[in-house]
Image (cartoon, rainbow, N blue to C red; front, top):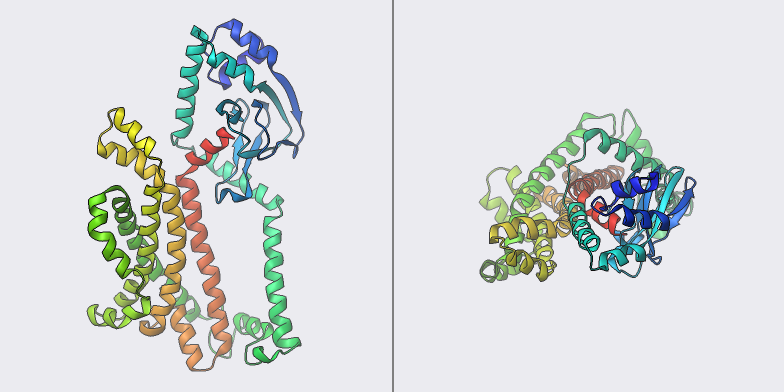
Length: 422
């Protein structure tokens, strides 16, 4: 057996094929050499061949419309470009050589001819390809060392891309507009606003004029109190909203009973609940957490329900025909199928939780960033208002990023599936 045949037998589901078939595939395979950064194929390109990595690493990147799915690294001995066997119009990912790479290019029509052949090899290949695709869709645990290495690789690739630097340009333009509008041009509508220089001096001062800066303990106390409230409210919204949304999408009877009530209550503004929350719940902490929980719960439950509704009915019917019980269908079809919508809902949920928290802290809190904004307004401490707003933006961005990271970790199997398909 030649080196090419041995690589084909290990990398693709061809180990049960006869040596003669492997020889024909090896004869059809074309060697491809790629330097670091070379484009192997672009998103949307015609899928005529699949590839095996002999040496090096290839990075499969989603297109800009693919959302938060991470890039997929393909190492030596692994195959990619499965779209060539799926009969789809074009690639779903683009492939770039992350290092200098040596590849084998196998025409997809040669493989498809074998699959279609009415022979022992064709039957065996169909079985093995189906099994391989099923294994790709199944989530698999990643060793801790490999996970860290992959995360560092993705971070390094992100730093080499224009994305972070374009973001910095956006921040710079906003700060420049703020500085010019308030301190240089002194536009009429910005006359009462604190300038960029004044806010930075107050924020970084060891002895702030209004008592709040990065050097004062009370600043971090406000942040920690808000984070604690967000954590409790978001956890409750997730624990209650996800099961509630799954049941709304899965059970027609459950939806018929509770969805009309849910839709009536959902449009009520959070501020309208403030008097009732203060009356019903003891103390000053529970009303704030309840008000923060409400908006977060609505977003989580609604997106989860939409996730269940988005699942192709064919998968449910197929699982039922194969003898799966309702509980098994719920666990292995409904929940995994709704996960992309669930994590999208959680990202929205954590954002609206911050909106609700600030409103609740303004009317019912004693500490927190919303309370700081409200008290600073009543005491005409405008630089402190801007400091609290900017802090809200930074902390809110971090919490959203953590939710996105959790979604990427929980659905790494989905990223691998899409990568292998494209």
